[in-house]
Length: 338
Image 1 (cartoon, rainbow, N blue to C red):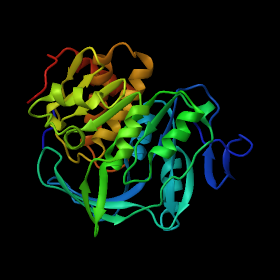
Image 2 (tube, rainbow, N blue to C red):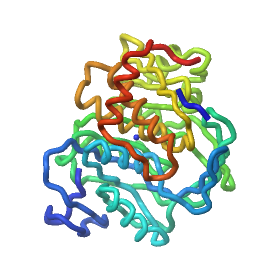
Image 3 (cartoon, helix red, strand yellow):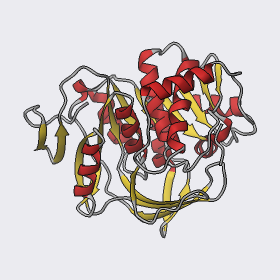
Image 4 (cartoon, one colour):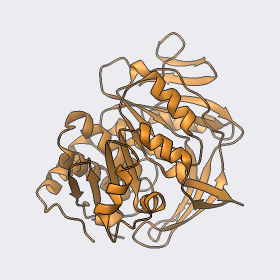
């Protein structure tokens, strides 16, 4: 296939693990790096693509993949989510090994999907393996964050939670709506428009949706009319709208100008997490150059390209390589590959 997303505040704010208000915390940093606080349940997935077949479940999830990428880019990232006892020990170990802090609530089970990809545009069959409990409330650690990511995987975040977050902080929020638009029937996943998406988009600084999600909420196919699609996404009330279109690239709209962003051409082994790591790249660069959305988009595209060359939570992303690929994209014509 070719393809051209705060440290855990412990009870005494000390390194190590502690428990407060039902959360399990891990916090081991005290420096001044930029910090992302990400809301969304981790999952353990089974993945199959034309290039690879995974037999064992591997760590994934929208906010999880974004945190993994952010950590590799030199940011501090904390994952807020729920996990069952079935995977709690594995999750805590996996996150610690990858320098991601966490604030976890207990769940009856851990979420997961079977993902079977059948083409080079990221189209897939998505089947539920397990669903974790929702994140019902949050009021910790906003003062130790610089950016909020809302990245649910399947209904664990709702508008009431984001209202709590908004009441506690005026930090910028990037929302990836995938888990706001998914529902399930006998384990089969389908997508639908929801009031939670409408309400959360209005509270968000940035909404980043893939082509399917954009079509679900706007009724416009971004492969046919990308500018109308991303403009319709923007009208839900965010300040910046982003639509990603797999191998064709992405398009950004800030209410005044469209920014077409080319994709970095590479061999895609597994597209899982491409949009998640795009979000992490977008946040990273946006905090540095908020007035240069072309640079922000090219950096995000560069980060995502590293993810799709690999499969699972271990991918050789570095700031130097992301910068190199971004510079390459900045020299290319700013057009979509449609």
